[in-house]
Length: 603
Image (cartoon, rainbow, N blue to C red; front, side):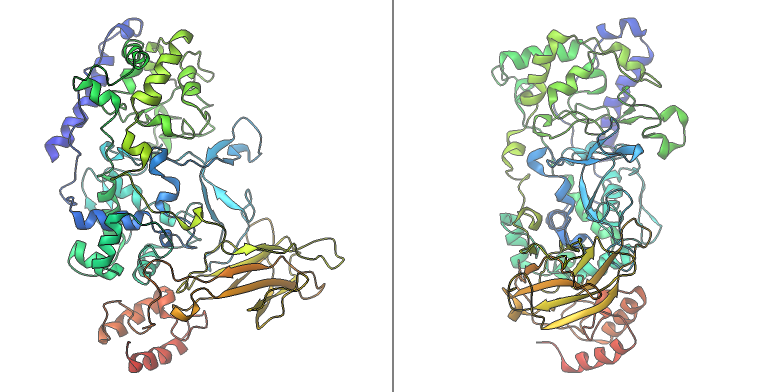
């Protein structure tokens, strides 16, 4: 497989070598070497592809439980029918932190900011709304051919296990490096200071894909044979150990099977002259002759290089320079593949364009910010009359119909975030004459077994005291009668801009709770102002609820002395599995509770 990896590098290097031998003025007349078909997928020898790892990786990729609050999966920002990119459109205000200015970025929605205790903490830019990433999401489809991933290349080809600091893949591990980034990102999937010990333990205690619906046939079959993550990891790796390296290896293996190579262009290059329309053929011919193929080199339609095309000012986003430390790399970004671009929502690293034609027309020039401009830009000679056929070629000639239709291997489940809101706000709240209605924060799914379920309150005064009322009875005239309460809790701003309070309400993994409706409402202890009521319907989800066996900390289905060692490790790591008495806290009293649970045995 190393030979295959080298062959891909040679395709890229041939273009670079070509540019070195040309004067800029004559570059447009020369043509890079075009291979007819995609090469074999490069696979690092440390992580060979197996079906067991592939299906585990697919399950992990689409499991929202990989995030700290169960709202984000890897796949949330990488929808296959959108070319493996993000179909949503949300705005990051850019470097000036002002919405509606020229440096705004069309990024991806992430999580609501939370501190190290998983309490809501206002973000200076987004407040207590979901954060938006500072760059558009790169496609995962065909990403297996890249060396270093992300727009700036920070996911390096050498993969270092974040839990151990040991190099696990010497070269060719860009996908593995990419896979371990978002789960600890406080903007994308994580609360502050979350680490891979905590993530691994959470996955060990989660039912696979509990939040998803409409599972794919291969997922259904895999979970029928191996219903727990311990089973799935044993099937893939030989034992139930769950850690960052294995999670990365599995997700990367799945991504190495997302190869789109059945476009009309592929069929045309294989000899079917009717595979592309006359306009697509015209666009393909223009594409080769106006310099597009120098950087968007067929058959990958990227040379995997980092280049500055003059899109934005140099210091707005320094790009690859942040990784290399080399000023010559300032504002350079990875050349994206053009395959399946007709399915994407936005284009360029900042999502500046929302249509393929806009992106193609940009190259007619002149470039608005020529500082550190890539020399190849002078070789791009496309004119306005050529934009339409080139657009048609890219939009439809390079779209794999399996990707567009979401058929295997590009099929996927429905995510919880795509379903109607649960919890849902069902009343307007009441300011009780104060002029301010407290805002309810309720976006964490109420799945049974969710030890991290929480609701918050904001748009309140610093230091204000709040109590959360909880009821099984619907509100009357916008007010619930509590069965229980949490509080009083003090609203604090922390490091953010707006005060907030958070109530944690762990949900037991109890089948009897499935379908139970619970109502939550915050009350200002001083003024009596009421937040809207949040209605939450507890659900078991995929796999159903399991009879509780809290003492089985290592999730091997047995109660042994190994569970004592696992409890100590969970206690020291602050892992929710150490909470044996269900009070939402991890204290020495949980050890006594663990002994009681151990002696009680498992169902």
